[in-house]
Amino acid sequence: MGYDYDKVEVPADGTPIQVVDEDADELDVPENPIVPIIHGDGIGKDVGPAAQKVLEAAANATGRDISWMRVYAGESGREKYDENLPDDTVNAIDEHRVAIKGPLTTPVGAGFRSLNVALRQTLDFYSNVRPTYYLDGVPSPMKAPEEMDMVTFRENTEDVYAGIEWEEGTEEVEQVREFVEDEMGFDDVMHDGPIGIGIKPITEFGSKRLVRKAIDYALEHDRDKVTLVGKGNIMKFTEGQFTEWGMEVAEEEYPDEDVFAAPDSLWEEQDDIDVPENAVMVESRLADAMLQWMQLRTDEFSVLAMPNLNGDYLSDAAGAQIGGLGIAPGANFGDARVLAEPVHGSAPKRAGQNKANPSAMILSGRLMFDYMGWKDAGDLVRDAVEETISSGKVTYDLERHLDDAEKLGTDEYAEAIVDNIETLS
Ligand code: NAP
Image (tube, rainbow, N blue to C red; front, side, top):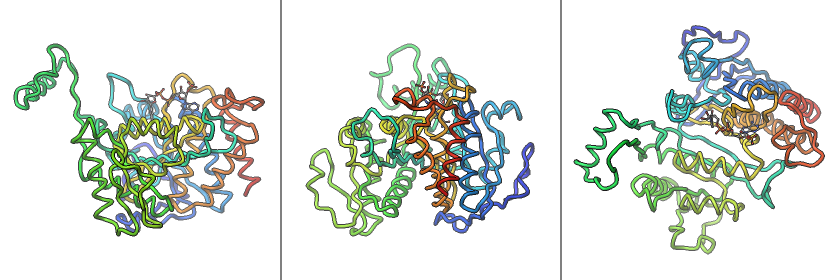
């Protein structure tokens, strides 16, 4: 591809990752790949460098190296380029295929649109994947947190995140109101006076490719169930349609012996269904009820696929069950590309204090390693994080729920993980 970069350099000592087959999601990963990294805003400045150090140690311990290509967005983008999301950054992530980022701040109510959403949409990272699993020693409000072993697939480009909305008081919002009332006949819900209006697009294309990714994941990772989560009883033609398209994928695109489309869970008890041996069952659940089942019947769920906003809420709630946002990893996947990023945001009030927990960003790096085919390095990262926490060395967010734990700063905690990487490898 060979972009011309304005203010960043492509590291000369690294080798670019190559695409072998985009449709088959196949990359050729060298032993010393170039990996772009955005440290991020707020606590990103703490957890970004800490994660970089730990991931590099795991790569080295498994006989590899990473040539980091530091790129900038958010506050660091404004400082270096006077732009929130410079072309250099988008191009570096586009060209190098595998990248990792810390959180970026998005102002609420006014100001610029989310840079996270812009990055996901520009490079078509259409599925946001968040594995939620328990690590030994992590304090949890649940009685049996180890029952949680769930992977959420969140559609990443559509829904209310598409950013089609109009601000109160503008000419555009009045045009939309007029159209909806006069042309479409919804004149009893708009009231007079100030109004904000947004649109929630859910497409067949976007829904089906996300559900396909979730089912393929379940088949590849020996998971027995994919649950489609929507609020189709209320948003019939968006979330209800998502579920219908998802069930169509299950029914039409896979052999019956591999994928079994279950009858509607609203009417039939799922426990009594006779699923063919070794087949992945695809079922649907309403989003509000799902939030309680996730807590009360945790071990019944495995892979979940859902529209964008549901995925945002549900994965934070799932993260709370296994110790909170400081520990919850994620990654955005497109075709033959990944951008790993923690579930959490920039937590501005904790920023720059060498305090935040870097585990979420470190474990997001584990997802990136797995995608690169570096499973040994990914497992080493996971084991070293678990060993550190279970030995009682933790950051403030976990320490406040534990008796007798040692509270470490972000850097010291990362160093303890690096020590464990060296011991375990
Ligand atoms: P947040 O940044 O995720 O933080 C909420 C709270 O979660 C923190 O105050 C802290 O709890 C805890 N927390 C989060 N990350 C932690 C970590 N690494 N270690 C320890 N504790 C952690 O959510 P927010 O405050 O709602 O959002 C702040 C900004 O981040 C907003 O601008 C939002 O748009 C943005 N955001 C960005 C992304 C992204 O970049 N992908 C994602 C979500 C939000 P305590 O206060 O209890 O210690």
